[in-house]
Image (cartoon, rainbow, N blue to C red; front, side, top):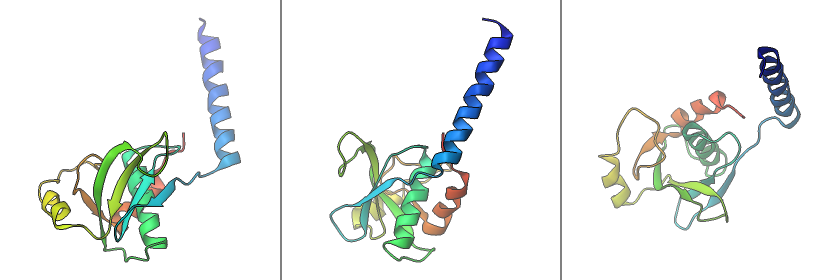
Length: 137
């Protein structure tokens, strides 16, 4: 293939992606309640990534559960098949952790933003900071 063809394809693809973003804008993910007090599941959608899970969890905790920014959210179900929506993936969170989750939180540290470790936790405020960094495509 010629360089000119590849370059044209790249620019057309970039234009189409930009137009789609402008037309459809931000697409929120589904968040569903799980059994138990303060438990919920973020179901994966467009613009997937660890930070996007935490962003959506923070928005739900703040807007629906009405918790404060310093409230910690804990992973109770690592990324895997959704428990609330067929043919989807999700991550379970809680703002009211059980003793087992708190125990797991002691060893769930690290510098990366995890969605695979039970007990890994971040504050609502910290998680909200990821909302501005989302890439839609």
